[in-house]
Image (cartoon, rainbow, N blue to C red; front, side, top):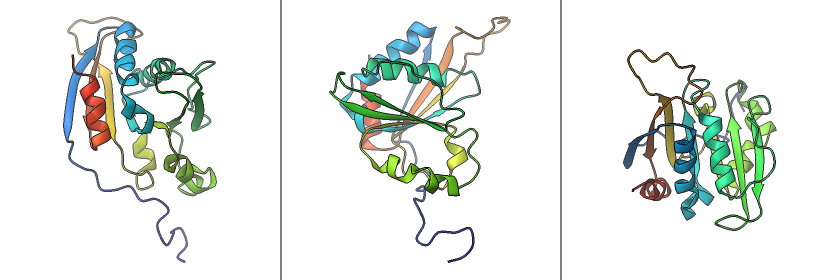
Length: 188
């Protein structure tokens, strides 16, 4: 085996697919974020989805994850996995019954060997919801993604707010049938 490579590859991210469908919208405030999360949580496909989350620091990715996990029945503290890389969660009673979920934050991920050492391959292969911030830092290692959520500030001329509860533009793209089911749950 060559140094620094795995034969066969440990996971191998499939080539990026063209989106099957797309949803564009906005969250006027945190209540809008919560309502969006509740619509996704109502969809049974959420229990087996891998969703990537894109947006600058402070865009609202972790806030969305908190609302989604609460809507799925997770209790207790829901914190950002920025330093731990992954935070496991479990909902014992929610709209779809017991559910395991993992919130990944690959912002500080830098060594592909960490993927194997931390057991990420097994986590992604297991049943449950996977929410992934900064997925580009694990490029080439992640399995196929069902949907990608992109969150950004809504550009408003002359906006002087601090951004904490400012409107957000939101785009969600589906790459699989599971992702398409999630998008269907967003329809009014």
